[in-house]
Image 1 (cartoon, rainbow, N blue to C red):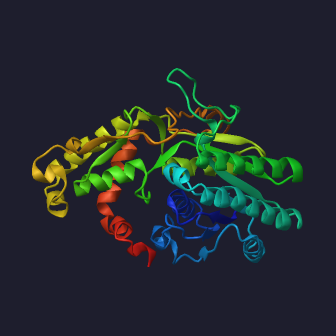
Image 2 (cartoon, rainbow, N blue to C red; image 1 turned 45 degrees about the horizontal axis):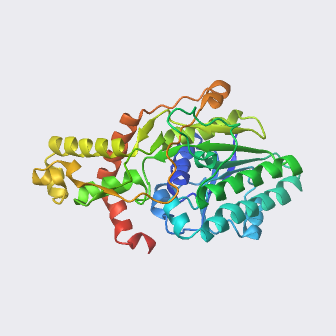
Image 3 (cartoon, rainbow, N blue to C red; image 1 turned 90 degrees about the vertical axis):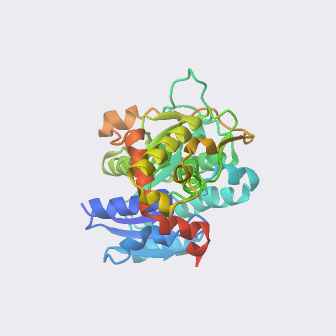
Length: 357
């Protein structure tokens, strides 16, 4: 079975990884990469795919319903995988308007276009919506992990906007019969991660000898998912997921923020000890100066409404579709650090702003 996919948010972190994954696993499928190229969108993330006959990049906003509708017809799209979203919680606290616009209004525009074209032409189709575990709120230490049937309790403008988009997708299925699936994932990490999130920010600060800011007491816990495992989980849902259902995709890796930062410090020290060239490339890094990386750790005031713990129960996708994450956190974080060391030009272009040119 071949597909013709529209991937929204395709120049962002998870969307770009999904495009690479899908082209590698399904080279006969056509992938239309759709992205508005806001601050976290970077065409360099998908540059290696541009020469493929089955890959096309479209610079446009998902709010443009007419553009989406025309593209669905022009490219005979039968599958939408919807990643496009504003996703940084801190930014949602400072300025929630963009989150409502993209995550709620933008998702609705996609749904309207899909309904008009797919249901109007009675075409076989799938609308897969990618969401977050943050819609479920916060867990205490003894609480069971999030399941798909848990009531939503979003605590930030970001998670509230994603909850709204989830409900719209559900409504378009139950009201109009749109063929949808939804997945709620835990915190992703891996290649092409924009360096405002915890892991890439810490890696780049470690290499530059800059402070490692840790919110509050550092004991906030997240369930970490290597991005390729997430892509494989979505593939399983597209191939075998039940229409109208929601699937949690997690990594079975609960880590406190401070423990992640400490592990990254240890790994950077280890990598520098094994490769003398790193001290030449990154002279400001602590191990290049004979010091331990963990001396850069700095505790800062906690952000407002900081959820204490997230944890995903991925039992449903495991039992129904055979999903098992391939990466432990220890193996995935090593691959991630190695990727940033091998792709210095990519992150340097973000730090100096030239990626926007």
